Image (cartoon, rainbow, N blue to C red; front, side, top):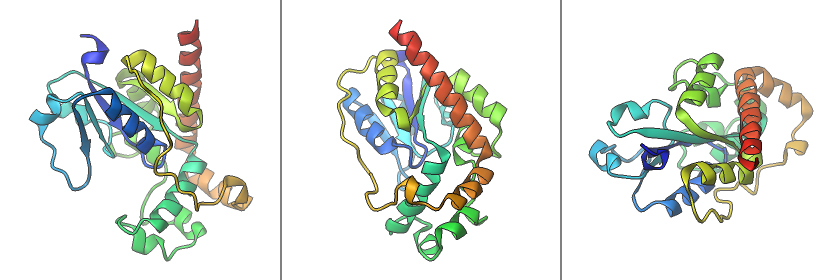
Length: 220
């Protein structure tokens, strides 16, 4: 079966540019399903659809008989953690808003309450303990494209090429304009973020190098 006939599963990792990508995906197909915390998953409806999107971990494809392929976006873990903190603080409907709104950035990145450490790797591991080798294997076996937020246009071009997309024009969505820039965050905070996200940093580097090689191959 042509990959374009598969159910496209967009595993939306928080604060990686996924809201913008979701809007692009929905322009490509007639039948799209977006799972949120408030929606029940109807397997029959999903199998009749072209795409499935949501903040779910890898592995949801096991529930479907239809062939599936995944895509996702990753982001530099330092930027992701910064963005996540300020997003939760400003989003009253977020389940952690009340608690995080009372915490400083330092308290947040060192907190064990929420366990956002190595979050991106954990997504590739089905939500279980993050394992770098397992995450790499998952990428290589199940993902048509793992895009990089800092290379969004290039990532989009590769998705268009591999998935047969047409109109990929977009404007950025769900951008937090009130969060500080990375250069405005005290440098000593970065060491804590890096220490808590070593697997994400390694996986991000791996995915970025893979993406660059795939883009180069596409242009040949």
